[in-house]
Every structure is written in structure tokens, then in C-alpha cells.
Image 1 (cartoon, rainbow, N blue to C red):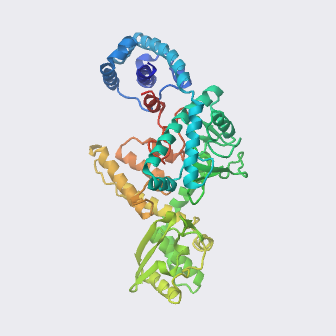
Image 2 (cartoon, rainbow, N blue to C red):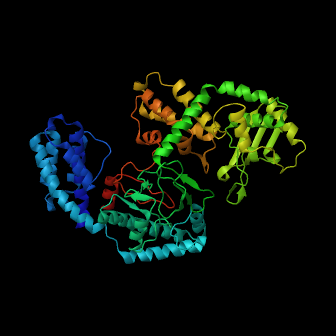
Image 3 (tube, one colour):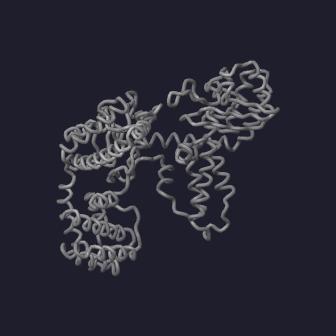
Length: 554
């Protein structure tokens, strides 16, 4: 009974919410109604949320389909009056039709609240059985105890060992995640709080036989129901973490009053390095400063380049070497590398850590680089420059295959860039400079659409994607055999350039770009709950309440 009834009920509540949004946003004939109260009521109920306001004819079309597909349910639960009242309002949004809709809405609101309490309680025995099974699989494959999540590499190992076992693991993991989401809802509903510390969340999970969400307890970070993270001062952090799939370490030196450092580090199982998480405010401030510096350099890049090229002829070998490194990074966007870096147990390299075997010279001008780079990917670069080639010919002739090419560090190079060239950036920002410069040139300076209003949105987005893929290839951002664009967008391209492109195209700025502009990669809807991952190991996505609930009650 509940399954069918809830689905119909929830779909209709979704449409009522849409109509309320439409009234508050667009309907001038309803100015006499207290719209603030309506909006606050919707928010307090945590009912279905939609981010857009659709046209009224779409409402009618959708509801007509519901009437057609669920005749028996609608008749059994006497929903015809409800649906017809809503259609009447959409066709004629007067005070009279609005009041009728609101009365129906309030009636269903009470039923909804009672039903929700029934579905968010979890069977603790089922949780215990699932957790024990998942832990046994993880321990067998990885050797880790008290963990329920496999890394991607470990998951592939399980597939190779026994495909049916891998499929069973995925099924059981996703089943537990469904229960986890309901438990999360229950913890917040019964607490009455909008945010809870990690310690309280872990305690609430463990009381229902779930493992801790993250192994470390902490009173210094909090989460809301959408798993957005907050520092001790209430500032939201820029990003989210997948429960059970990462280890976190809170920064004991984090000054929450001044907010001048990272809040925590996290490391996914099987990953080589740690990542840092900052507050949104700090990330926003640092991104603004970063791009301000980069644009100043872009404006005078040819002047700076002439300066460092002069040093290639210098008698001071260290300055000469730094100048060569600047030119190579500028032409290729190569990473400089960090001594001792590894990926999957193998040494990885960048420009300043290269060995003789990684460089091939042809004739008097051609230089080719071929080495294992960050993430374990094969990195190949090629450039033609007589002065650079002459430098490499001279320094490589007496070296053995595994001898280091350069005798300078990243610190030496940065001192040269700021001390001799006065650029006020680090060598790492050369990649940001080149990416932003390339995107600006091709999206703005060479804007390809003479009549953007007459060009399809599909064509404009395809061109944008083409340029972003070219930048991804330039920066060697690969996932397997595919070029990726997300890292470039988040870290190497000034989002104001993307915004300008959308303005020139006369297209609405998407939410993702707005998040980039605000350095805010957390979930903008604090009432949204995670979607269950469809495949393992994936990340948990964060759709609206509407998507999750209509899916769950199906």
C-alpha cells in the first residue's frame, strides 16, 4: 500500500511546491498572499525541492500523464479533487483557486510527515549483517580491518579474482548506502539540529550498527544533512568527502578565528598523496589573489619572456639553467616534479627531476621528453629551439642514463622568477597562466560566433568543450585514455573567462560555473541528500530532494 501511495503523493507534492515557487516568483496576481510565510513553510518541511520554475503547460502535461498512468491509485486514494484543483489553479491563478490548492496541500502535508517517520528507520540487524560481510571482503582483498570500502585498484583485483563476488559486493555496498542515507536522515530529524559534529554523527551511526563515517572523531568539524562540511567557526568548507572511502586528519594548527590555513587533509584508500581542504572564504580569497597575479603576468608576458631568454646566454650557470627551465615550462606546460614522488610504487618525474634517459635530442634544435609523470601517466613533450637544444647537448654529453639532468630545485627556480624577473608568481603558476591565456584567446579574443543569437546552444557548448579538452591535453590531465577538463576548470582557468563566454553567447550561466566563481564546491542545497552510487567505486552524487525521494518511493 505505502509504496504506490507514497509515489503518487510525493509526485503531486512536488508539483504543488513548483506551483508555490511559481507564485512567489512570477505571479503578480497573487501579491496579496503572504509569500514569505509560504516560502518559510516549504523550507521548514524539507519537502521536494526544484531549482527551476517551469512553464505552467508543462505542469498540466505531467499531471495528465500521472492521471493516465495511475488511474486506479488516484481513484482508490481519492486524489482527483487534488489534481483537478491544481490544474484549475495553473490555468487560472486567482486567489480563489490558490486557496483551494493550499488547503489540499496542507491536507497532504500532514500525511507526508507521518509516512516519512516510517521509512527512515533502519533494521539494525540487517545493517550488522551487511557490515560484517563488507568488512570480510575488504580484509581479504586489502588486508585492512574495520573498513567496508575498497579502493578502485582493490575493486579491480576483486573482479579479476571472482566477478560474481565483485557483483555481490557492489550490491551489498549499495544496499548499505541506502540504509546509511536513511539513518542520516533519522539522526538529523531526531536531533532537531541543522549541523552535527563528526563525533555526534559517528555516535548516531554506531548506535545502529553502522561503522563510523570517518575513523577519526572530531568536535572541530560538523556536517549538515547533505554532508557539507563546516569548520568550528561555522564556515563551510569548499568540497565534500565520500563517507567510508577516505581517511581524514584534522589540522591541529588550524586557526578557526583567523582562517589562514587548511582545515583538514584527506586521502582516499589506495591514493598516493593527501589532499587539502580549506574553508570557502579562504579558498575564495586565495583564488582571487592567484588570478590577479596571473593576469598581471599575462599582460606583460612577452617582456618577462625576453628577460629570461637573455639569461640563457649568461655566464652564470645557475641563472642559465633557471632560464632554460622557465622556457621549457612556458612552452610545454610541464610540471617541475618533486624528488621522491611515486605512483603505484614506481618513480614519477617532472622537469627538474628528469634523468638523461628521459630526453632525446635530434639535430641542432629538436628536443623530446618521455617519462612517467604525476599519477603514473606517460608524459611526452616536444619542442624545437636551438638555444635550448644547445644547452641540453652540453650538459648531457658526460652523463649516464640515470643521472639527473638539473642541479636546481623548485625553490631555486622560484627565487630566480621573483628575484631576477620580478614576476611575483611561482613556477607552478606558469601552467595556470598558459591555460587561462589559451582559453581567453580562443573563447573571447577569437569569439567564433558572429551572430550568437542565431547559433544553437548545442553548437556553442560544443565549441566550449573543444577548447577545454585542448587545455586538458595541454596540461596532461588524463583519466585512463581520456582527456579530462574538471581539474583545469577548478584550478587552472580563471572562471571569469568562462562567465564572459556565456555572456557573449547570451546563455544562462550554469550552476557549476557559478560555483567556480564562488570557489564553492559544496552542496548548495543543505536539505538535499546523497544519491546512492549506481556503480562502485563511484562518488555519491547530490541531487535534489525530489530526485531522491521519487526514486526511493518507487
